[in-house]
Image (cartoon, rainbow, N blue to C red; front, top):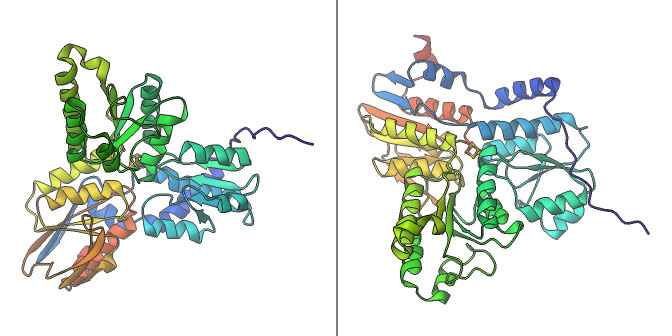
Length: 408
Ligand code: SF4
């Protein structure tokens, strides 16, 4: 009888200069836009007689997304064409990019593979972990199976994991400001419980934070608490025991202002309950909004300070950082969150995502007649070629050819 200890994770060097050179050429051919680069170089705006478009100074692909895409393309180039390569869920939250990855012959399986999917995987099959990471249990299963892991988890996501593990070691419950169902938050919560007795609770917004604060200060109905946060806390979590010391972390792509407010409210309530001098024993926080998210939010804030008639936000509808850009726009002016240029059906009709209803809706007469100034931004998972398509379509709806405009 032979006994197999789980294989040690194998390291694969995909970043060989010859591979990366070929990858970069292919990635550029899929996602680059000369038009966007030209507009950027010309002060981020393009104008014709009755239409002006203004681009945010920072938008589109972030360093984490670029790295994840490069590694996925490099994996395909490094292994023979008949070697199966699998991707856990989506590499990033953009449908066009995910389609391109599938076109390379990379097969998608669930981000948390079922037993049936696991049984198909063979030792030394290549499995790509997406930019938002994966849950500890999934990773362990893949390692036990002897799969070759191409881990594209962004370093900024791993910093959150480090923080949450630290809270767990110190018996501090992680309060994670994020979306409980988002892959990144699921991966992060799995870190809170994987290495000891840690607990976590995910809060999505300020209303949920206030509910938790009120419970900390005044107590409440435990069953109601657990029902309200169903699916958003660790197994065995007891709000009476596990809210005595809390540490805040966040999904990397939340709205910074909101995350700061979550921290402020929880800290204030701990001060009220235990006394200002004892706050440090009951409250920790660490800012884990990633730099790319922050840059895109700051740039949009600056764009929104200028006179604009409407804002177009381009990106995948399940992209967290993109949805927050759309939220910032909505608070100020008519904002249309679209996944591609085809959604601008005509100057009389646009089909766009309503993140509150969680569905696409139609708006008529969205592009005002006469002179119009349109702001444009895009989430960290949106390639420049989709931004170019959007710009071209906007000008086309005004009967202007961008090609001719640039030639003048
Ligand atoms: S949005 Fe931030 S955390 Fe996510 S991949 Fe990009 S850099 Fe990394």
